[in-house]
Image 1 (cartoon, rainbow, N blue to C red):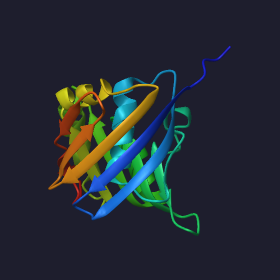
Image 2 (image 1 turned 135 degrees about the horizontal axis):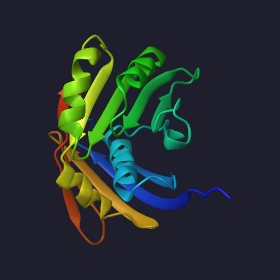
Image 3 (image 1 turned 120 degrees about the vertical axis):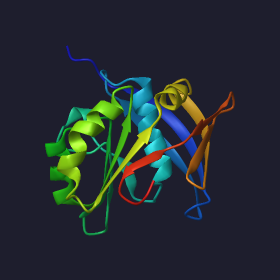
Image 4 (image 1 turned 30 degrees about the horizontal axis):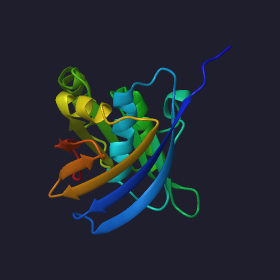
Length: 181
């Protein structure tokens, strides 16, 4: 019998001072059996950074042809495709052909090696942003993961403060390519 996804619930209050966007989202997050708390919380971080009324979690690990997060316009066209982790060049370029904007949020201890190998092949992608989160910060985000979460996120000047009732984690996303963290 196949393992089932673990369901997490989060109330996410986003105060994005950079985009003048303030919203509260009730999130249901299905964590794939092979997904870590760290990866799941990076998905939540990306949800906060790109918060919109149409942004939704995609099938991600369950379907390699779908993004981790997706934002479609009213016609069904993909405005925003978000990948989390260290996807291969071919998958990123395929996403760039399907979406208006693609964002890759890279994290983990091997980001530098991955980026060194993949960056030259992505140079021609004009609709791509690649962002990294330092390893110690992504691990600190993982520590916030609980089955039921109450999270507040404040974004200002490119910095992110992720708060739970227990603690606050400061995240410094670094833009590797593109024009928008």
